Image 1 (cartoon, each protein chain N blue to C red):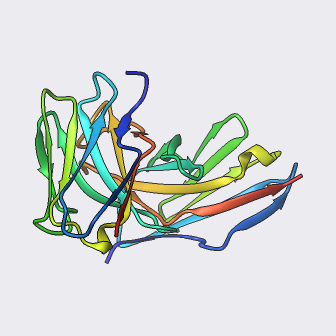
Image 2 (image 1 turned 90 degrees about the vertical axis):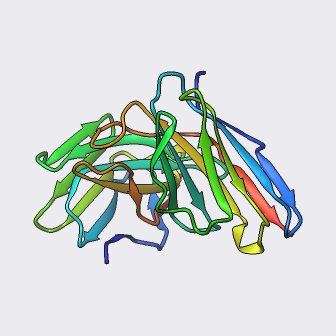
Length: 112
Length: 116
């Protein structure tokens, strides 16, 4: 069956360091992969989208990589700040698919 | 509107009652989605609308769940004869495109449903 796996353990990181989150998937051929941020009591907020033929995407302090051979995406937050503390979700959609399928999310806590 | 609006933000209902959850998407967004998020869990897909039609209802858990969308805008998710396992946050999202499109979703803040 199709699976999208994110580390369920919280990631504790010191302010200023780089946080790296992993999204692994099996039995899936995604056309696009997206990353979202979710704060408590709020809906997810779209951050970045990367296509299957793209290796890397950057937006400000965020960087996403997509390796369709390893079936993995890495999400990096550089120079992390306490305000980056949140849960980060990856989501995939198949080519001609009509909906995103989400991973379980990884909670990030940036300590000052 | 400026964002996706959901109402009510919180709903407590007795087991066996019916509830209606409302979603007002961003104007011009043709695609609308309902997801459910249980405590500490990921998002579970329920239904997808393109315009007023629902080409994908595969995530609706049972025939107690139904949804409609009118005027290509507002959507209502109805849960009949609520059960305690229906307790969750119900999230609505809209986007510019649907099938095969590569747009991010804009989510509302959700309706927290508690069945007692």
